Image 1 (cartoon, helix red, strand yellow):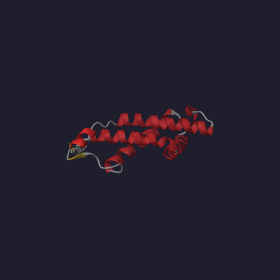
Image 2: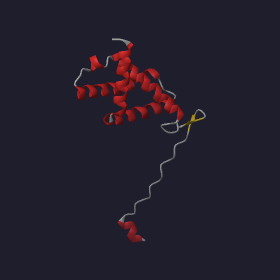
Image 3: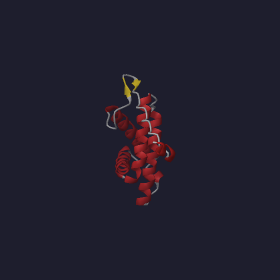
Image 4: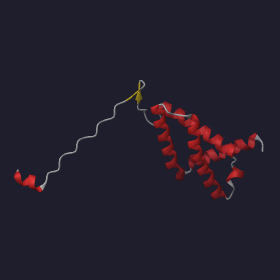
Amino acid sequence: MTQDNYHAEQVELALYVENEGDLYPQKKAIIENMKRKVERGEYDPKLAVKGWLHWVNAGAAKYCKEFHCEVIRTFPIAVRTAVAQDVADETYEAIKRGEYGVLAKANGKKTAKKAPAKKAKKTTKKAARKR
């Protein structure tokens, strides 16, 4: 296969996984995980690609089930890895731009989280009678 064939497969797979609604919850979870890692300063690009590869593999399997093909023949691992790499890079840049919400870091320090509100004490029947 030539590189042009791989490019066509990459585009086909990328479009399919981006537009498949059943894969959206998994995508959302990966984005939140990436965002958390970026906020903590623990982001590792290689691990991000690995995380996205699970999502891309799920999309490739769904594609081949729908269109009756074999994942390995239709989307070789090089194609799936390239798609995962592209998605990881694009998502990282989008997180840094704030497209998925403002990062919790401010000037290198984490911002303080709000303390949970205190719950009102429940009054018992005995306490209510005493009043």
